[in-house]
Length: 241
Ligand code: MG
Picture 1 (cartoon, rainbow, N blue to C red):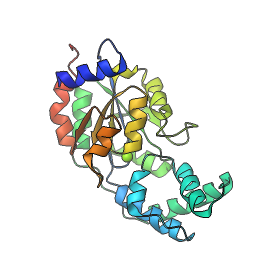
Picture 2: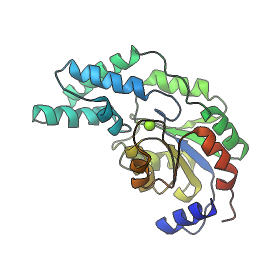
Picture 3: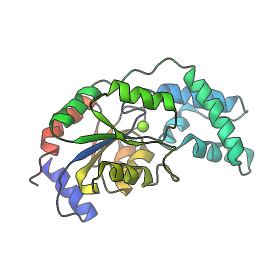
Picture 4: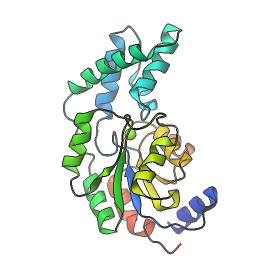
């Protein structure tokens, strides 16, 4: 772990590692919701005659739905998609998502946050989602762990992931610098955003994409389970490197 931290500091040109906060992505990190999203993407776009595969839905994960639609529909229809069209199509996608069964929590993520809390880290959530019901669910499911004042959603920022802006805003809310911040992500575009923001980025590969996709985006650590992160946490939160 010492090598991981040293490599991270060297890569960004930082002097010291002083972890104080952890920022969690939501879909595929807090909740096992990506299969629902992928189905909702496929079915809603099909209702407009646009083919969008499940794999494509995973590749776009992390980007705001509004922007994903502009790319996917724009490419298929060969023209620019207006804001109004995109908002309406995202509403339809959200309806499809809402009709899916409730996504369960990702195994081990609550325990991981408890360990972080015990180690003195503040905990926040940075998501490309703008669905209020989901955000309320987070505050209920992770009560006493996630700080309500460290929540960044699609509604709070102009540029979404893979731009660094959502994580920069998350750090602003947490009152931390990049060398004080751990990000837990699962998606390639989310990892790219967190790395661009300068955070130490832990990728938990909970989906179907190969590990190297996350490593190639610059993740400092790639594991497969939240328990895996939990096990390495004491060494990662060591402040003496
Ligand atoms: Mg995600």
